[in-house]
Length: 310
Image 1 (tube, rainbow, N blue to C red):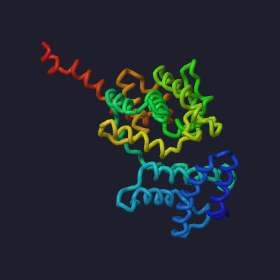
Image 2 (tube, rainbow, N blue to C red; image 1 turned 90 degrees about the vertical axis):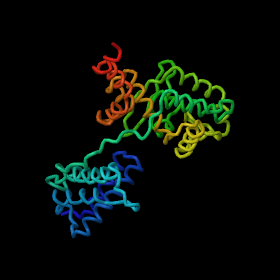
Image 3 (cartoon, one colour; image 1 turned 180 degrees about the vertical axis):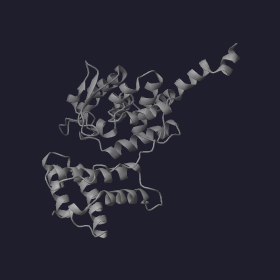
Image 4 (cartoon, rainbow, N blue to C red; image 1 turned 120 degrees about the horizontal axis):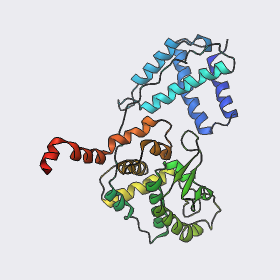
């Protein structure tokens, strides 16, 4: 018999041993600590005493939980908690602590389909981008960042984690190392974005890296990697200053890039590769946002619209 608390500690130690990121192990520890606390309140102390009915009750109670403001927890939060429990029991079977896996049939909470909060039009993107004062060093750097986000659809941490060596200018590619899910991928980048990156590399980065040497592609005026919160604040301010009344900062450029490319005819599976989505369903939400194509089809094929042109 194995105590649940002992199994959790051994599982986290095993994750560290096979190279899981420290942040991932810490988050997994928080999720499993909540599960162990729930089990203790229900007088379950041994790993072998947990059954599928217990796991389903735990999952259902997670779904019913509410935040301080009374709103339900996000689907992702609940899914992370349940996934941590499923991985604990899968590991327990592999390591010989359990003969059978009670979590093998445990289903995740169903993911709701949420459309992106906001997407910029082509004209709005240009308004935001041209708000940046490129006559300043930080402004020129920020313009290069905005152009990169718009061209590639990178996530915030993917952009900030880029090293100089990840930019392949002649091949017009960016190498994204350990994106979401710790998966590497190669992303195409357009000539316009590369032009602004060239200016940044020639006119700005050498001045910013005089204080310290850095491998990072985009750096602060002291040569360090840019903090995520700092980038969010700056990009949010550019959107506000442009007069575009839409919420967002970094991620809005990812949504915009995917939506406009789909409007332009990009195949949804190609977008899945570029965006680094593990599941096609995640990418397919952009088919719901890409209304321009549907409007063109509607105008061309609806009988009432055809009658107007007769």
